Structures are given as structure tokens and as C-alpha cells.
Length: 159
Image (cartoon, rainbow, N blue to C red; front, top):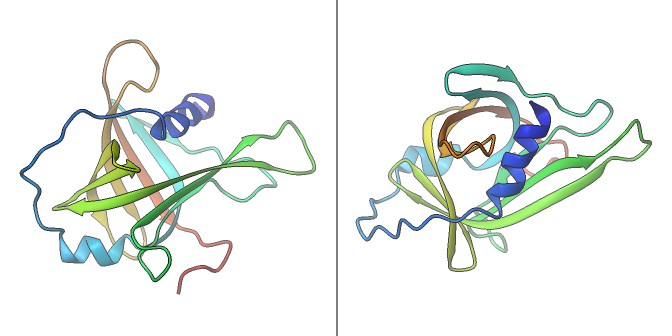
């Protein structure tokens, strides 16, 4: 499952959406504040089947971060271990995008190109859950994917 999910993470930066809705909602003020921070993947639910996210032992956990501060206005960063076969060092891959919140939908952009949308299901100080439709196993069928994450800030970037 980790390899399948790693594909999900990688294609997050490669997949594109053609939905250019002009009916953008104002951001949900609670979500706008609550998502700011660093989050580690915890559980993945694919079409109703729940999997614990398997982090690479001995490495920092795979994570994603929402920034909105001077110098990092609406920046999104994702870091995950991309290669570690019983190694002394963990090879990290990072994806950097811009984000925009419309209602409870986070739109992620590479430049002006919409990459994907995430629907926030819930967020508080203990967890964030979001939903995304995605062909996670490349079988030609769109899968319903829910991600549960927990606060995790190994670099002390957030208060």
C-alpha cells in the first residue's frame, strides 16, 4: 500500500484538473486558520478500506505543510521519503505548490495551473481529514480517497 500511496503523492504534483469553476466560494474562516501547520499522514481510506500509513522507519515522517506568512504566502509543501532501502540516510522528495481555499475546498496550483482539489472533511488541533477523487491504482476507475493526518512539526516551523 505504501508504494501505491507514494504514487498518489508523486502524481499530486503531476495530475491536473480541468475544473475552472468561476463560482468560487469565500474561504471558510475556521478552515483558513486551522489548516496552517505541519501534518503527517496517518490513515488512508480507499473506497472504504482503511490502511494505516506506513512511514519509513528511522526517517522523519512523510508530511505536508500549509503556510500563510510573510515570505510564504499561501505556500504548500509536501515532503516524503522517496528512497530508503535500509539506508543510513533518508532521501526526501519535496513538492512545492500554491494553495487557495474556496469554501471547504483547497485548490493546489503549480503556477497558474490547477493541480488538484482537496475537500476538507474536518480539521482541528488533533487531526485533519480531507477527500480527493483519484485513480490511485491506475486501473482506469476513479477511487474515493480520504486522508487522515495528525499534527507533526519535526522542524519546529509552526507554533
